[in-house]
Amino acid sequence: MTSIVQVDPKDVATALALEAEIRAFQAAVDAAQPALKRLEEAGYAGAESLSFELGELDTESALEVFEDFRIADGDHGAYDYRFRVIRLEQTLNEACAYFYKEDEPDRVEPMRRYAESIAS
Image 1 (cartoon, helix red, strand yellow):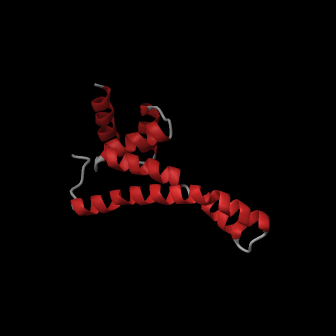
Image 2 (cartoon, helix red, strand yellow):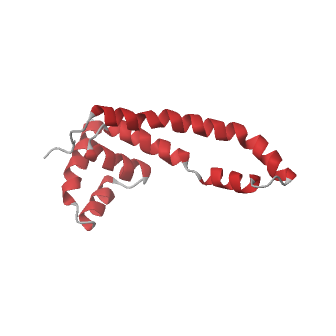
């Protein structure tokens, strides 16, 4: 059983193109922070809410997911490993136990194979 599915490469490229857009958006939000702070301090209507909502956007997590998405390149085992072992800082055994507990044992072997491939 392979852990890679066949998809239209254009769909992957479209999804990956979002990474640059998110990076540009985050840079624009960062650049606007001094102005937003001044507007808040002046009591400008909606400035506090806008600052709050922009602060709630988790572009850092989205960019981490993009990194995993790009590196996994469609391989479920690689993605599961990156998410559970790298992002959640689980051991490989803990990650495997999670999938057994969730009644998804078919996800364990592809993840183990990926772990072995990057260890060598």
